[in-house]
Length: 365
Image (cartoon, rainbow, N blue to C red; front, side, top):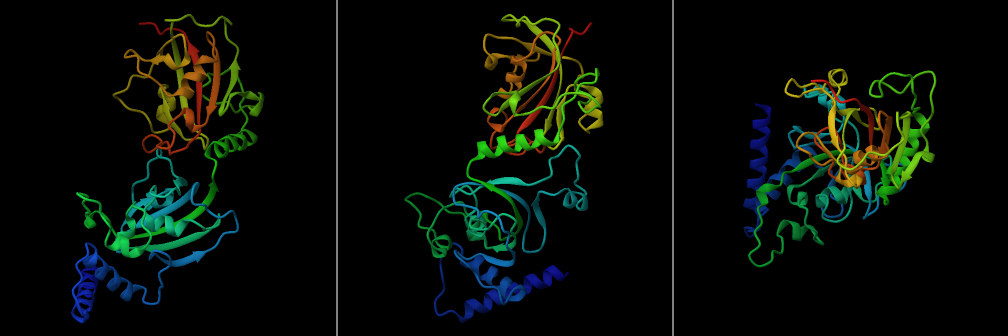
């Protein structure tokens, strides 16, 4: 009832603005602008627009490096509409409050590219220049949720369209962004390699005689370090010596157990039933048994399963280091994984990955 009453007030204010105008405007965003202005007049009458026309209503500046125009900002955020309905977020607490928490999902900051047209114009306007550590709450009108790059707010309100180009103003929504700038880099490869280095500094890869997919953390073992680098952004550590140091021949079929993880420990995939159950991944439609791997002349041609499907490069490179009955772990940056797009709700964009692999005997029928 309260929302309905406020909506009536916004409409009334918008109609009042129209009646006082000398001429009736005809731009594609006129009605949306009147509604937005009426909402701002009621809810934030003293707020002043900046730049293209975004409203920063809360601002706690950080002390780190300023976000640049052509880099990557690591952001914790929550996005709502003007009525407070949450449409997107990064934290587990919000997921729990909404009853949407899933232990298989990744919760944490995500990267936003700040290159022009990769973010909505108003979001980029609010973000670029903010020092790392900054918290901001920003109200962005719908016309600035466009990914187009124009020079002025007037152009966003009434876009200069090319011949036969159409503009659907209703495809954008007024939004409220609350975000914290966690980190910033203009060199994503270096940032990922550095993050893997920080992971090595805080995690110990160990051997205790148990299957590689159980745990590497015991009272004895060896620490994985940057010295285990095989190539740029790729690291491999042998956890258990092979039964034979001979390389696999072309067209050989081997069998493996594996676990895929993020650096924060989130398990996103495994063919081991116990691991799948422990991490909320178990599915009755999946068969939990050693997976076929079909060897090839090059690591990039190795395939998996009875259907001989392809695999991400980092997984294949990890296998390529291994010999019969060996256990090992590969760690690699997203260039060898799921790059900027990530995969599903478990792997965010630009995420380095860990794969623990054990080569096992062919399962008996």
